[in-house]
Structure formats: C-alpha cells, structure tokens
Image 1 (cartoon, rainbow, N blue to C red):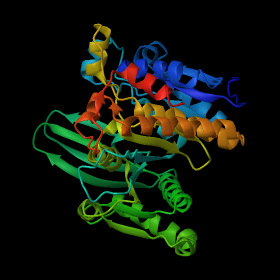
Image 2: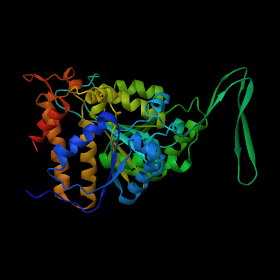
Image 3: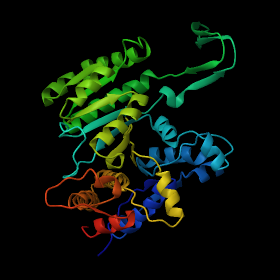
Image 4: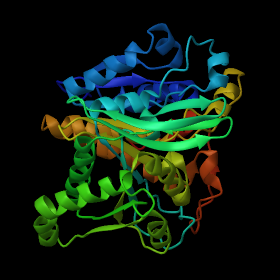
Length: 400
C-alpha cells in the first residue's frame, strides 16, 4: 500500500531523555509505515542546544512561523544540577518559553478521555481545557539576589524622557527581588485566541486572576478580556449559546472542583502551568493530556504536556525495560498531522490522524496500557495488562 504524502513540511523538534527514545519508536512503529514524513528537523536536545548556544531553538521557532505547523518532543529546562550533569556553559532558557514568546500564542491543554479511566473527581464527566497564556510572567522575569541592606525600586523610563518610580521594598538584610512584565498586545492576542477557540469548540470560557490583590498587573488582564469580549465577541457568544465569565482564581478553583467540566479555563502563564498539571493528574495522568500552542496569526505547535521522564531514561540506558506512557506524544504527532492535512485539504492525512488516535484510545480501553494507568483502570470484565512502552506501541499498531 502506498504511503500517505503531503506537500508542506512539518517542523519536527527532537527532545531529551526517555521522550527522545519514545519519539523515534512512535515514528518507526506508528507513523512511517503509513505516512511519508516530510519534516524540517531541529534537534532541541540539551546537548545540541549547548553546542549551538541555543541558536537551534530560535531557528525552530522561526521555522514554525514559516511552515505554520510544528511538533515538539519534551525537553530539559536546565537547573543547577543539569548544568553540572551536562557540563553546560550556562543555564539555558526553557525551549518552550523561547518558542512561546516568539510565536506569542496561547497553550490549550485538554485531557484525553478513555473508557475505563475515571477522573479522581467523579463529577468531571467532560474535559476541562486549560488555556494558558504563553508570554511573560516569571518565564521572562528579571531577578536579583540581594546580599545586604538596600532599597529596591521599580523604574520605567519612557522614550519621551518621563520616568516613573515605585519603591518595592526596603531590605534590612539579604533577600531576593523579582520583576515581571506583560504586553497589552500579547494579552489581547491571548483573549482573542481563547474566545475564538471557544467559538470553534462551542465551550464556555472562564477567566481567572487575582485582581483584588494585583490591582494593576492582574487587573489589566481582566480589563483587556472584558473590553475585547464586549466589543468583539459578546453577540457571537450569545448566538452560539455560550458564555464568558470572569472570577477570582481561588473562587474558580472551588467552582471547578464542583463542576462537570466541559469548558475552557483561561489562566495567566504561571497559573496555567500549575493548574494544567493539576487538571491532567486529576483526570488520570499527565501523559494523557493534549497540548497545542496556537498563535493569533495561524501557527500551531503540538507537544506532550509532560517532562522528559528522567527516571525511566536512566533505567533504559542501563538495559532495563520501562513502561513509559507515550500517549501524549502520540497525540502531539496526530495533532500536527491532522492540522497539516486540514491546511492542504488532505483527507487521507486527516483520516490517518483520526485512526491513530482511535487506535490508541481503543488499545487502552481494551485493557492494554503502560504501568502508570493500571491503578486507574476500572472497567467491568476487563483485566488491565501492563506493557512495556515498545510493546504498547506495537499493540496500537495492530489496530491501524
């Protein structure tokens, strides 16, 4: 049987550790036997980021702008321990942060629901989609380790010569100080991405910050969302029978725990980072979560929502068999292939993406899965069987 082809390359970004191993297995077992992959390849593994002084990450982001669809493997964001382990010249920035800042997009994350895997919160019968702003906050911060008595100020120097100052704190001794920022243009893009995604999926939008405490920073997010909703989306939302609501983040957490799901929860960058992991785990596993970065000018980057699974990687390189869940990475590939198929009106390619996801879900629901899902699986008449990562991929391939 002839392989499925497509015209425009997909930007492929290789990653680190166990997810790097899974990446190659997924391609070898589930994709390349059926699809003639046409990718522009960038190795974002930490070794190559060090080798290229992280230039490769910027090049990958520019390639996504050119080809509009990318798929990314999980990568290491180095801390002090990793700097020593990999003998790095510096503590390189998060590749995700660099790419998100370059594309100025919104990250949408939603759980992959499987019959037999019940959420820890029984009332969550429908998926909750996290919409995470992908610019600014602590991911583009500036920090100083204060080593003695001092005064810290926030200073803004305008191009017209004006200057604005506010005292942050008087330090009686050592401490730390941090500055974060955001842009009206990026907040506006975030709002429009959320509202457009809601219209395309016919879901309500809940947006949450802490504007009662952060009366300028968080309040600006609240105001921009309200202005854009009232001016551009209110009539369209009412026509579709969906709603936009703003609430304080602590109140929204309480409401969400009591909800049935089925809506988009829009959050600032750091809040979205934390809450997406919480929601994913509550639905079953971080490895059962889709993640796509959507920019306002039509760029899409698909990735798994989890990390590089370091512990399993060291078992793997020591010759031990691992049972690492590849589902989120499979769905990253299927998402990218589907989006490329949609952009080229390629029904064969979109159909394959649908079949790949269906085969993956049916494999798990029929009782074949990786070890992280065994304790979560409860389906009458089906006894779950733990498979190694590679055997799980081969089991999925039987259904393609």
